[in-house]
Length: 394
Ligand SMILES: Cc1cc2nc3c(=O)[nH]c(=O)nc-3n(C[C@H](O)[C@H](O)[C@H](O)COP(=O)(O)O)c2cc1C
Image (cartoon, rainbow, N blue to C red; front, side, top):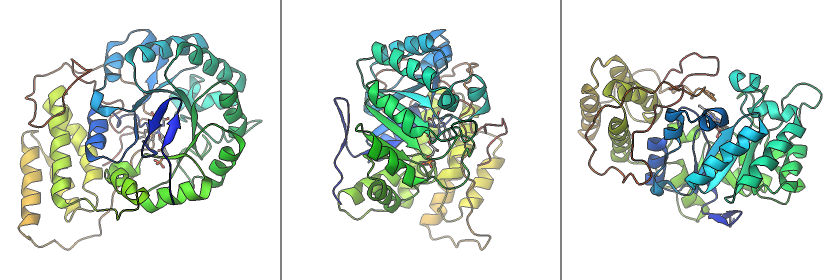
């Protein structure tokens, strides 16, 4: 099966594989890691509140910084007020990312109660005013990400209508996470509906929901006819999924990550966080990420337990190095329960505005050049916090 690149406005995205926006996860370090690993066509930033950005809240503005190496990159904004969203879009335009995306799919209570995110699917006239207002202020391509509908009310499923509105108003592409807002992340994503959307609009459709393997991505492309595949949660337990999927699309055999690559991603991610955040924050964040990254590593459960019990951030590297050294030395694998990984919290976490004070940390060897961002990156929103405010376990 030959899959052409995704063309969004004047932008070519090749391969047609998109890293999903994930609040509390898709910060600069994570996006850069995905780029370094390769295979991803477009990376998305975690969503940004148009209220916060237009009020000039500094930690939120910092969150929008990115490096050239991340391109092509989409910045996603959300909000309920057309004028404020338009001002937010104008600020996004000034930063010159490759795409500006509007979130009309977030089911988080905090966002819904503010009548933003998926709530806009319950008020399509307002959704249209927002799209139109943003479109006028942008020269870069505008995309919109939405769900099947609210899943309740008069029009529980109205994605086809919203898709047509997007097309009529000059949106360059739409992304469908094929669940209702009410479903949150439960049940299976309804890929058939992605096909229906593709058949009813002439702009590109990015399919999203439950792709967990390269073969799954290919299957979504084949079954729905969508123009690109967006992957979210699977990129946490398998950060190499884009590289392997890109290989499959190119007709090559996907190659699994080696143990050395797994070790490297953990240590590199930690080192990059340390450049911007104080060590305790970095350790906290890496507890969450190693909960995912250690998936499939022999003794992963043991390593997670050790990292979870660390009292001092300086012991993190040692713990990781010792584990991988033991694996390389052929240490016997302790018999125990089969490997289990908690799914990432299905969160569109609230924006954090209280950034911790920056602490000087040595730049790690081989860290990416910081082109656009002279300052530290803000701490991740929510840090693995669920929509109901509870902490995600790693
Ligand atoms: C932790 C987390 C945070 C998310 N944050 C956002 C967000 O900021 N904006 C957005 O449009 N979707 C967000 N989503 C939804 C994802 O972009 C994606 O639509 C969803 O996870 C389904 O794709 P998947 O099955 O590949 O994970 C988030 C999902 C998760 C798990």
